[in-house]
Amino acid sequence: MTTLIVNNRAIDSDELVDIIINSNGIYKSTLINLLQCNRISLEARLKTLKKNKIISKGKVNKYFFYVDKYELKNMKDLDFQAMVVQYLVTIGLYTNKIQVIDSPYKNKQLYLSVYASGKYNYKNDEAINKLANMRVNQLISEEDRKYFSQFIINELTKFPIRVASFSDMLQEKYYTTSLETVDILAIPNKESIPAIQSNLADVSFRNLENNSTLIRNDILIYLNDSNTLGYFVKEKNQYTLQAIYSVVDFFFYLTLHKNSKDAIYISDNRKEYDNADDLYFQSYLNKEKYNTVQLKQGKQKPQP
Image (cartoon, rainbow, N blue to C red; front, side):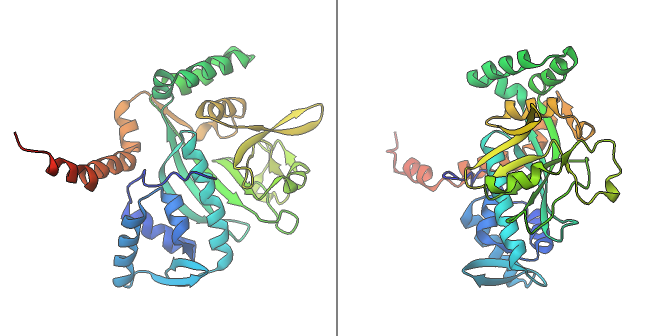
């Protein structure tokens, strides 16, 4: 990824501490990408936490932070997964809450509460408007068209995403454990795709507590080398990846694949959207308040 979405989100101290506690080691650079925050502000928070002996600091090529223990593999996985967060923000899916969680695969994963405003995008972006109209016409059933339209006409769409990652699918095993979230699997490149495709299945009717091999066929795949996100489309008994380039593409994906439908929250209440957007709005206010260049220029203006 060439452009990182940083300094767009204010830092929530409780969220920061929880991430460090649950990560068992996380790079400072990963925290910046994950939290989309200001580097200087983050360093100040980390310095205070370290001074108060809440966290410890280490270095293996680059600085990292932990509480009781650290594992290099966790740090690599989370660094990988933070790039998924960066991608989501570039297409208009923002993070209301970020957590680091354990997984059945013995590595760390991200749990994200993600939100967007289809209504705002539809009204203010002509390209989004045209794409939404094109996508709704591609849907065959009236039920799907109505469902898709809900994402566009409402102020807030909010849902959970779980992000996992594997550097080598041939050595490490990935399988579906739940349909309660939208799932994203981050992999280095296309070389791992055949291993995923061979285990794809409709698992919506299965007892996933006993599953140890199958992967839900609506899994989202993030390719790190090309910085792309996509989902599998089956044509003539062959799977191909359909890329997601915008928030409308993501809504289209949610319409086609409804395994996690119960976890999606849609509202036309602007106040609910503002509450979800609080950390980004706070960041905007901070920029206005602490814009030293602008403040300096204002002081230099001659008095009337």
